[in-house]
Image 1 (cartoon, one colour):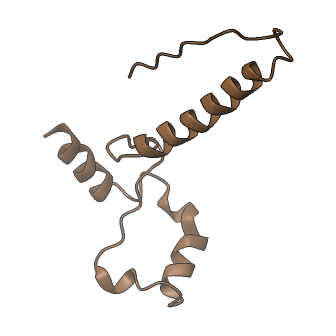
Image 2 (cartoon, rainbow, N blue to C red):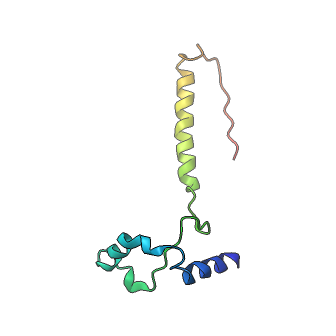
Image 3 (cartoon, one colour):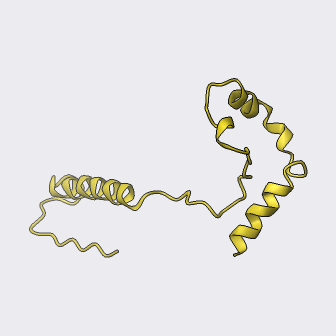
Length: 94
């Protein structure tokens, strides 16, 4: 409900939100390089609008974490930072 009200405010107050500063974006859309103009009314959301999902994808984050974890463990196993490793235990909780 609140998100819909915020979107309506943005839609009906485009001149107040200084949308005219986006001339380059508008010219790009109108020039035909993108077929967005034909789809309907163009409404530019401000960067402060938080209703959209702009977060990292959890699968990408966990893959990067796993790569970094494996790299760290291999450095420990090499024996260079702490000497000979007798055994290790690794626990990851999400």
